[in-house]
Every structure is written in C-alpha cells, then in structure tokens.
Amino acid sequence: MKNITKLLAAAVFLILLWQVGSILIDSNILPAPYPVISNTIKNFNGKLLMHGLYSLKRIFLGITFAALTAWPIGIMLGYHNKLDNLISPVIYLLYPVPKIALLPIFMLLFGLGDATKISMIYIIIFFQILVNTRDTVRVINPSLFYPLKVLGASKAQIFIHVLVPYSLPSLVSSIRIALGTGIAVLFFSETFGSQYGLGYFIMDSMMRIDYIGMFSGILTLSILGLLLFTATEYIENKITNH
Amino acid sequence: MPNVGDKPMIDNCFKVEKLNVTIDSNQILNNIDFSSKTGSITCITGVSGIGKTTLLKTVGQIIDKTSGNISLRGNPINNKELKIGYVPQDHGLYSWLKVKSNILLPCKIKKMQPKESLFKEIVDNLGISHLADRYPNNLSGGEKQRVALARGMILNPEILLVDEAFSSLDALSKLSGYNLFLSLHERFKPTTLVITHDLDEALYLADSIVVLSRGECRQLDNKAKGHKKTDKIYLEHLSIVETLVRGEDFDEKHY
Image (tube, rainbow over all chains, first blue to last red; front, side, top):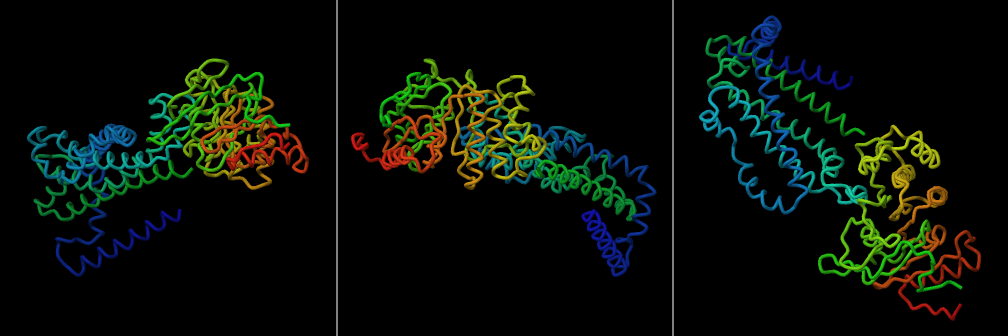
C-alpha cells in the first residue's frame, strides 16, 4: 500500500513537472498533460490498445525465447568450467557489440515483419540473461550440491533441484534490468517497415503533426514498460522473499 | 582399559581400508583404516585441517578417493544404490524449499514414495512438525539443525554422515541436540559417522572414536559413553583422545 502511495505521488509530481514544462515552452510540440491523458483514455480501446498489444506480443515473445535459451546455457557455462573456458571468449567478444547496429542485418535476414523485431529484443536480452546466470551459478557454494551428491543424484537432478531454483531470481532480475533496453529497441525497430506497434503509432502521429496522439503513444508505451517492470519486480520479490 | 589402535568392534561391517585421498597434488588422507559396527556411532575427530571433512566427503562419494576401499557388509560403497543420510555443518537446507519439501527431497532424488508416517514420526520426535510450512531462512540455528537431521533420517538410511552439525549451537542447545540425535539414532540405528572437533561431543555420542593426526588414524572404543564428565573412566578417555589429537604417542601401559 505504501509503495502504491509513493508511486502515485511520483506520478503526480511528474505530471506537475510536465504541466510546468508545457506552460514554459508554450508550443504544441509539448502539449499539456490533460489533453494527452484525456486523448489516451478516449482512444485506448481503439488504436492504442491494438498497437499496444502488438508491442506487448513482440516484447513477450522476445523475452520468453531469450529466457528459454539463455538461462539453461548460462547455467551450463556457470557449472562446467571447461565449457565456460571454451565459450567465454566468444561471449566476451559478442556481449559489448551494440546489438541495435545489427538491425539492418536482421531486416535483410528476416524481412520487415515480426521476426526482425522479436529477434532484436531476443538478442539484447539473451546476453544479459546468459552473462548474469553464468556469473550467479559460478559462485554457488559447492556445499549446496553435497546433500544431493551424497544421494547419488544425477546431473539432471542437480540441474532441476539446485541450479534452476538457485538461478531463478537472477533470471528475473536480468529480465527486469533488460526490459528498459528491450522496450527502447522495440520502439526503434517498430519505426521501420511496420504498420503496427506503439513505435509505429508514435512516429506516424509525429509525421501527421498529431502531437497529442504522439504523446498518447509515448504515455501508453511508458505504461506498458511500467507494467512489465512492476510485474517482474513482483515475481522477483515473490521468489526471493522466503 | 581403552583399546587403542586395534579394530575394536567384532562385527565390523563398515570398513575403511588403506584410504588415500590426494587433491591437487596434496595428500589429504594417508592410509586411513578404521571400521564400525553396524548401527553404531563412530566419531571422527582431530585438529582443524587434518582431513576429517574430506574423509566424510569421500565416504559419501562427494569427492573421489585416490586409492583404498570403503565398504559396507563387504560391498564397496555406492551412493546410487545405498541410502546415505547427510547432515552438513551449514545444515545445507535449500532456501527456496519449505521445511517439509527440504526434508522429503531425498525421497525425490531416490525416486521413492515418501512415507507420511515416517515423516510424521521423525518431525514429531525432533519437535519440528509446526515448522513444516516455513522457509529455512525463517528458522533459528537449532531449528535448522533439527530440520537437517530430519532430512538425513528420512530415507531410514543405512549410513548417516554428520559433519560438525552441532558446532554452531550454544551449550544448552547442543545438549538437547545430542539427546534428540541419540534418540533418533536409537530408533533407526543407521551406521553413523560424526565429524567433530569437540572431544566432549565425541565422548557423549560415540560408540567408537577415530582420531586423525599427522595423517595417521587411531581408533578406540568409547567406554565413557553414558558416564558423567567427573567419572574416572570419562577423564581417562578424554586424556587419551587429547593425547592422540595432539599427535603424541600413547602409552597404554601408563593406564
């Protein structure tokens, strides 16, 4: 309850700041909060919801594919030193590459449809999860494995009963941290060769000099980010607060 | 008179013979020999870093032996086939599992149907039935230790390995922990190895004491078990074990 109150207070503060900014700038480039919020509510069930759902689908699929592949690979690399020594140099070289620069290659490979946008989110979140999970598993106290090893547990049982639950908070934390970048990349990739998604909606509104519509899109994208961030934080708290 | 150096038990069903363990070119255990009677408690003691925990881990096949034999009733130990209970020093409880799931985890690993009656009997004996739905991070040190003991016992194991499980408890909790452990051991009678550096603990719990010193291994029957700390036999045994722990030669004639 206290958190909700704090969030509401922060939202009111930001809206006030926005109002002051719009008065100071006094231009239709920065409309006041009221017409934007009112337009967002009015159009939510129409275009905004449709474009929002397209964006949500892309980010959800990108995160899911990244988690399903990077998490087990990260666990294996963290658990097997030899494998890590072999693969780590490749990750070391690829991790710092600005993935957004790969967008043209992805567009050439996968076309202008969903595959490119989902792949962009995937490739960014993949490395975050991979590196974070590997580093988490690498520092597990070996004594955590002993109760299972004494029982003659197989590697699969150690994976399921220790490595997966131990690294789960790190997975959720990686997703939470990567969400901001993921949404930024989603916006960018939706501005190319697309007719659906909040990125497209925002840029299209700008081209049509519909600044209130543009701000409604930005507001919806921000709310989408906030909801995803809050959801991952909630899951993270649930699985770590034992 | 305590019998030092010989194999003290007649029914020596659990045997460690000429056991050597070398880790990263360091010989940790050198020709370790001892044996335990089925269902007995053997305490392994010695100064820090002498290899007590390594010995226990080798018996549990957590680490591999370099050479030698570890056998139960003449068959080499195989943790995939045997039921081995383990109570680690840090309790080894999984923070993401509730107490009940922690205790029943060995049944999952061994793909055995957990016996609710056995679970109830163990948790009732240890006084932890009210903790079943709590997470380990919300337990006290003594409660964690009892949960770890329950997990070690849930398979009704043939061998129970206990690694300094009482070391983190205060004096009063230790005594109650010892008594709970002894009553549970009396009920299920696993062949038990207890690692401890506390000689009073060894004399309180053990049927037989193995002392590791300077890479050597000496074993004696513990006839002081059940005696008061002021009894002559207790003091005699304490003095012998202290001498052995220091790595000094023991002169049996002196006694």
